[in-house]
Image (cartoon, rainbow, N blue to C red; front, side):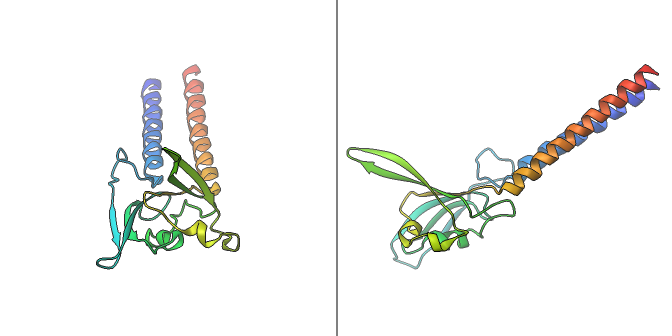
Length: 170
């Protein structure tokens, strides 16, 4: 009887942990070739014969992917085309990674823009260049929520282990 109870508790704990791990993978919303159920999407937003640039939108947005857009579209409009931030995303720290030429070499330059306060953002900061990679960061609240989730699962495992130990001693 004790063995049956022990294996039952271990089985339930294993199911809970595997469901938790799968849910964590699916909640990220990050564009990745290795993510389960995630494929790269290509979007085109320009009028016929209009000069276009190609940029990538990653992170916590509704529609991450590769965007071929009119050269007149700025960062705000690009994020609107991407559906805005996901429920776990924030516009507080939008990162732009850009290739710049320094003398005879190319280097990647990264900068962060707080789009929650547009009064501090100039038009030149919103302008996009070909090859830009725009990444919408994760909100602090979603990080805290996930930490509490992990702590909750650790508590379930600890309680299960204590129960098994107590039952084995009887």
